[in-house]
Length: 336
Image 1 (cartoon, rainbow, N blue to C red):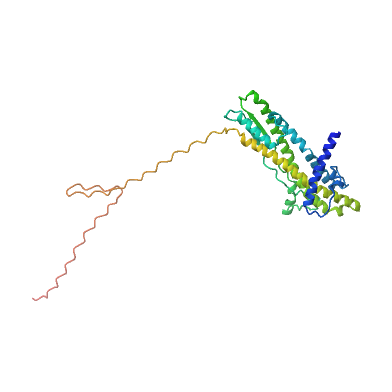
Image 2: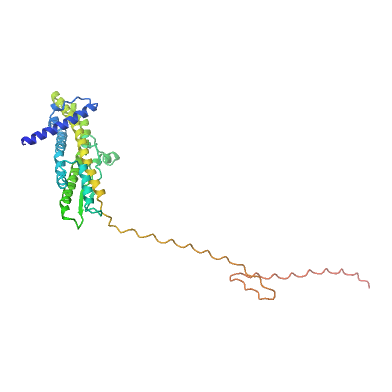
């Protein structure tokens, strides 16, 4: 490591320590921590001799180093657009405003000279619980509901979406705008890489911070030497503070990059290529109600009797009733 890099590295370590001290002052930590006296507080890798604890310290050191390089990464990503816009040292928010204004103004009151599309901008979900059954002493019960729950952490999880940026200049791009479009393309893709890197770092730092509490509860059981227990406890406390500062820094960087890319994709959105939906069908004419049937006209006297409608049954004419029988005359007495 050169002298310049060593100074830069030490400065960034001090930045993280300062943030960590602020976090410690605002928290109610039960164990006091002096970051400058710990290996982690100095940006070094601490090893305790315990496999489970050392894996935690290695992961903590990795995310710590990742965040320490964020300033260089952001400067590298912004440099092409800064050069194209002649805006050295401008913030990312200012670069966004200048880029959108340039893209629209160069279009001569027509469409912008470049379109930007971005996919995969969904924020990364934070999962702070990373305890595994094998390490926590939980035994999965085969064939039961409890075993199914315990085996869940071992199921494959879908990885984070990769951010993909597409910059589409017009076919009639003026020659004097090519450098601007090139700088915009390189910066947009550089910010996409930052988002891909520091989104997971933010999540990882949150997970490790939760794990540090569990490891702190098991120090007395894991280590027999009093001096070692004290050192491990101090390093865990320092890790807790550093991880909190690391998570905050990674979130800040990720949020800034996401806002920049989302703003470009909305301000320089390409026209929709989808065909307009077909017009709705004309409203159907209301069905005509059948005309009311008029009752048949009564036949005139001497006229023709109207025909009966089809299907009408003819009622049989009633038979004339027989005349009542005359009563028989009473027989007269025979009188010879």
